[in-house]
Length: 335
Image (cartoon, rainbow, N blue to C red; front, side, top):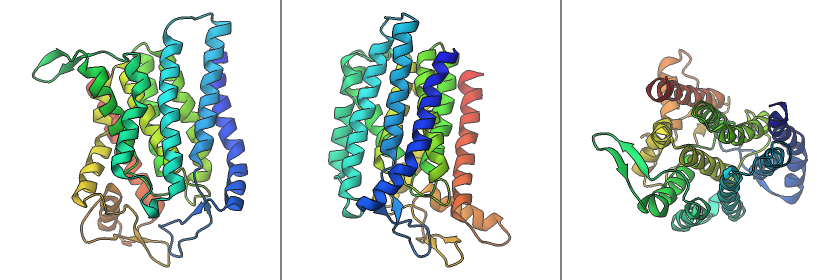
């Protein structure tokens, strides 16, 4: 077991040690973005730091596969599942980097192109017929979807999780923190349901995210970019499919389902950013609510005597809501 923990340590240390070098190189190369929730909107925050997290994650998982192969002498189909999942993650990280380089202010890749590429990225899980086509549905009981499951439902799951995870973003530490919470819980679920290998893969990303979070939390020194948000979304969907806990995953994704509904209310054109004041406090950017971030600002303004709301408080409230959903999921699906 101590050998297996090595993958977690490797992913954490690689991220934690490498990010400062990435910050320096990104600034020299001009790969810097505005911190939109700060009053003067500093334009010197290193972008696309998620690529470091992805590389650290991949190396950590490779270490785990090597231990399984050369030490534990396991030559079962697990390695096939792992490499299929890594393929999905790598394809979507490349798509994310493309979107980062094109720039969100220039609208990056079109919405149609993003969804299409997300469907393409699901192919590795489709060709190995990942998961199970039989799903227990409310009111209908066990339903066997047959070929519809790998050919349609898996791509929809990957595309849906990837694109919606990217909606709830834009605040220091938010994306990385959400990834730590959700993937940490999914790793626990995988372990208690007999998928210990999947738990190790999930925790490898959790530890890589922890190494990144120290630099991404308020005040952020580096931003994740789509190269990380797309990757996290893909891994969340992949774990749910391979671990066969899709219903639990959908429940845990309630904050993102709400976020998607609010974004659709704004026709996918309204931004999640707030309107910053000189003292660092935030104001709602619109008269209506177009995201959980806006809702968090509204709630905090109602309950705080000072009426002053700050960026990290918005992040903590969203994290708190996610933790509440996770606790509910534990008692509904696991306990």
